[in-house]
Length: 443
Image 1 (cartoon, rainbow, N blue to C red):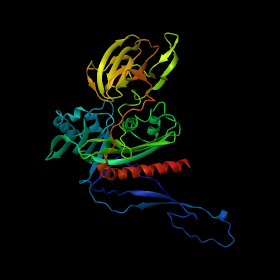
Image 2 (cartoon, rainbow, N blue to C red; image 1 turned 45 degrees about the vertical axis):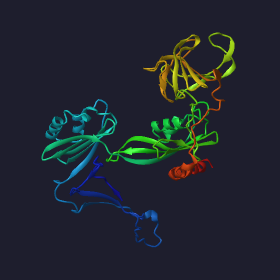
Image 3 (tube, rainbow, N blue to C red; image 1 turned 60 degrees about the horizontal axis):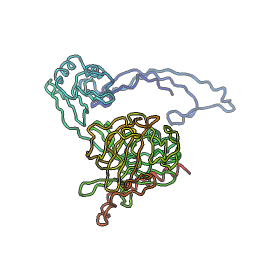
Image 4 (cartoon, rainbow, N blue to C red; image 1 turned 180 degrees about the vertical axis):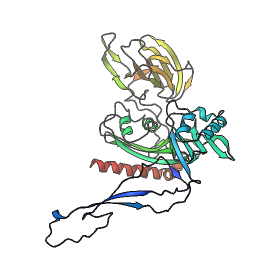
């Protein structure tokens, strides 16, 4: 049996009162020996009759749909939604929502001083409740930094409010395999870019996501998403747990916030993942020259030691402080061009050369935190192209950052271990579930 659809599905999200529809529906029914709607229909067939000689007759009948719904549409209300487009105006959006002319005029007049209606962000959603005649009953929109614009009709007057929005936090779990880059893998797995960036930050002290990545690496991540009361996901939150298996070696992290309010990432055994130095000063780049005692200098045209690591990156790429410290020098030094030197303790210094410019407000003596943007990649000094020259100096001597054992933050104290295990047990269990899924996929 083939049922010819009467109309396309509408864009209505929900309706409080069903509407009566009285139509005549034409059904085209092909009679045969096939099951019909899950029931086997028996047909009498004369003995010795060939099935090929059974005739098939097409029958068309008009069937009236019974009156099951109310007689009127007067109480029907509809929830509609519209995505904000680039260059949109609230007037155009109200028109797409089917709001009648009078209510559109009254709404625009009532909302003319609204901050939310002046911040229409492409990609965000506006929700509206209307009647079938286009009367606007309610409109809501999340704008700015988690603020709710709400307009409700009461006694034929629009009442407006703008207030902090309330969100529902949900937990998501994703897993994926690396074929080319981590971001390509996270995109394929449906992981938001903000969450992918957190993964690189969490493991930045253990994994260089340029030199160390291997095809076949895989990741699992447990993270928060925030949803408004309309159910729309508005943003991604914190990574709660993650695992990255690099060249067969697993790296795990769980987020834990102590009773003191201080939070951070730890291994399931309670070891802190926060090291004093990041593995690299750029979020995404590639190493063009490593630390070596013999390199042919592209400008001087002779062999000499290269006491740092060069990261090739476009001009203007942000450069991060690999550790917290103070600016001991920000200026120009011969072959380094524009350079920043940070002092982190009596023992450690880092240098960032060939910069195009410094971060705004950076000056000698300024304190910076690990991960702060301090400058931007350039090609000043003796450089054949844009790149960052990075040095780690220990007691004034340049050392290979990949070979120096750097200090870490203290682990969970023994007296706090029971609370840590209790709080992170469910996160570790989620990672185990996802790991087993990945291992099963590899078999």
